[in-house]
Image (cartoon, rainbow, N blue to C red; front, top):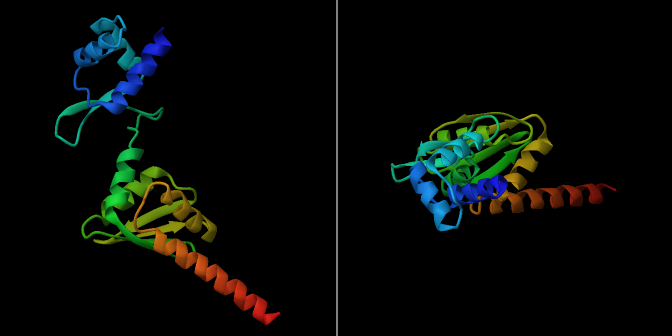
Length: 175
């Protein structure tokens, strides 16, 4: 019963902007779950929910991960999707072009996403340099980001594929 209630709370919190414990309790009651405000309060504590300021300026509950960091992947994905205009690689570097003024936010989002092999980011006004441990990590980051960004990365993917084909063609010409 508690498991099902927690599952429903998680679903409600991720789908709706819930501002108060009483609002959450009422939503649960509307779905046939008998709860008191005290039960909802315990559930919130056990589930590691916290309040943050939403996009509309109002408070809402969100789910924290085990480290206590808000689950911000969706928000980061929206930011990356809206801010990134294009990308390219140069060995172990991934260079992202962004809308003016958004490079710092994009760099912070990339740092927080924990991309494999990412050593760090350096942001200007409209460009982010991402340093990776290995060349392959920079290439893998593009593939990983493609799942989050629907614009700006197609060009780099096709360029990378063209570079690979050109290199393979040059090698076959030498043989």
